Image: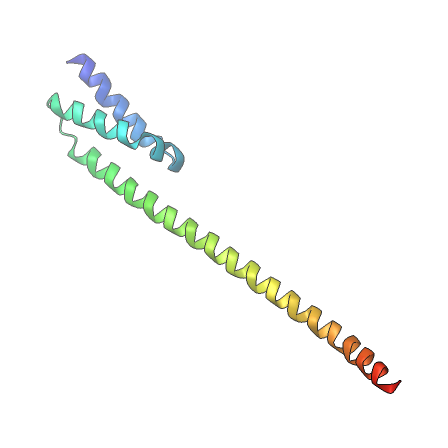
Length: 105
């Protein structure tokens, strides 16, 4: 039983120190450990709930990060369009002058 106590304690520690990247890499092993500990008679329902909540937060974080990436791309595209418009406005008077000069000959 002491071995399971130790395993149970380690699973709790693993959950407490999870970060986004570590969680994604270790979620399957963590769930398996919870199943094993539960099989030994421990009540892991609260831990499973924490893991589920962490997983929901991770998914929300991923969606938020993708949203930020998409927003950054839109801003960059808008900046590029703005820059092109400015270049056109700068070039247009020069083009008109050149055209006018050509027509004057």
